[in-house]
Amino acid sequence: MLNVSDLELRVGARVLMSDVSFRVSDGDKIGLVGRNGAGKTTLTKTLAGDLQPAGGSIERIGEIGYLPQDPRSGNPEELARTRILDARGLGSLVVGMREATEQMASADPEVSEKAMKRYTSLNDRFLALGGYAAEAEAAAIASNLALPDRILDQPLKTLSGGQRRRIELARILYSGARTMLLDEPTNHLDADSVGWLREFLKGYQGGLIVISHDVELVGDTVNRVFYLDANRQVIDIYNMNWKNYQKQRESDEQRRKRERANAEKQASSLQMQAAKMGAKASKAVAAQQMAKRAEKLLSGLEDVRASDRVAKLRFPEPAACGKTPLMGRDLSKSYGSLEIFTAVDLNIDRGSKVVILGLNGAGKTTLLRILSGVDKSDTGEIISGHGLKVGYYAQEHETLDVNRSVLENMVSASPHLTETEARKVLGSFLFSGDDAHKKAGVLSGGEKTRLALAMLVVSSANVLLLDEPTNNLDPHSRDEILGALASYSGAVVLVSHDEGAVEALNPERVLILPDGVEDHWNKDYADLISLS
Ligand SMILES: Nc1ncnc2c1ncn2[C@@H]1O[C@H](COP(=O)(O)OP(=O)(O)OP(=O)(O)O)[C@@H](O)[C@H]1O
Ligand SMILES: [Mg+2]
Image (cartoon, rainbow, N blue to C red):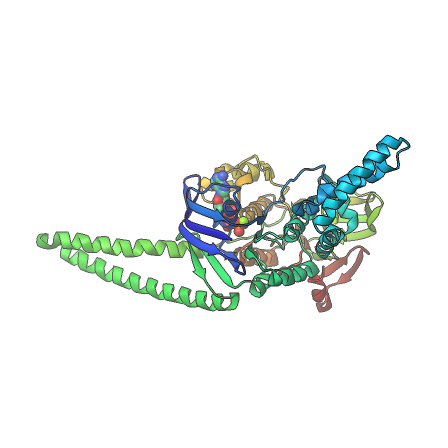
């Protein structure tokens, strides 16, 4: 349970929200929404106790399970399984029992005797905490999140960012925390896992705050909606399900529009009268007051307009290149004994649009990394055609240098860029003057996505390799980016779970992993997207 009163949150000098009061009780399932950069992550981080609020108080009753938007580190040497099991105190017991079992086989009777005793005592505690049933429960949750045994037996440091995030999610769902704060839990999940999570959250008895751009998940699970309005710096609380919230919100917007039109009318008539009266000395004071009132009416309106601002994106005219700028021949990749894909061939023609489909773990991200030159394939080669310029968008935003500013990142993407030009492009991606000097590391999830895309824009790439580019984006920004993709004249290789994104790209071809079969795009493949 959470009890929040008069909360105020700031970052630097900027107030994100103030006068925020609410309560999260058992059975409350709250969808927290608001545009990118509004402060959703900052709020959940504060509720979890990772940040201190500028004002107000937070009372926490019971355990809180918090899934941050960025992958969290944990001890890198720890096994994934231990990390999950430790949520109920079982992890270190299992490790200890395994060690004791090994020592029990010792030839030294003293050692084996001691190990036996230790095993018994650990085992007692293990059983008291739920024992094998609890362990099986953890394994079931993990497997539903596409984390097979093979991965659970690896240390955290060997896992990808997406896998680590799934481990964290499994840990929280397993912990039985009374309140869960989930920041974009579906970002690294395949469709099956998302479906399973939806059911899990529906049946969850505790309190929940979830931030998600997955409308279906929110639509299916929440019974309250908190709308964080970045312009008014308040949270509007809607105690209703998603469908009703949307209706209510639409009528709220309509009402605001009407109020705005009325206010504008009033203000202009006030201004006219004030101008008339202002000419007469005897009425100068009244005229001034009227002018002030008009000003006040209008100043309230600026805010409303600002909320309509969304990124107006256009991808660059790509640099000239040959007929087939990028080719892959006989590409294979294995991790240890696990074969990801073998003998994949592909041609990326100038201006062509290709979608890569395949189940989770089929190697879509790996293939993009190889095509971009970040990773090496085990066999085969990448052949660059004449004039090739690759623009790679990484799912984890790993192309951003988190220690450098927004502007510095832009300049590193295109060294010839002047500061003025860089700022202009940043502006069209909704970064204001001050934002340019922010460190990339403090940006919100959606802001990082926008910056990474802005860097592609200035690099004049002719082959874009995009790995889940619509994750984290609010609906308006997502539409803008999809619109820009549709009209882009360079080649695009897209990996996405987002059917709308694939539709907007209107691909000619599809490559299916792990088999590496290439085919012309047809509607039947659309059904595969949500499975991939
Ligand atoms: N240390 C900081 N200095 C300056 N600005 C910061 C700092 N930390 C966060 N911000 C800014 O605070 C704002 C809120 O960030 P937050 O991550 O809470 O947004 P969000 O609502 O979660 O957005 P998204 O939907 O993109 O994830 C962003 O504009 C971000 O750049
Ligand atoms: Mg966020």
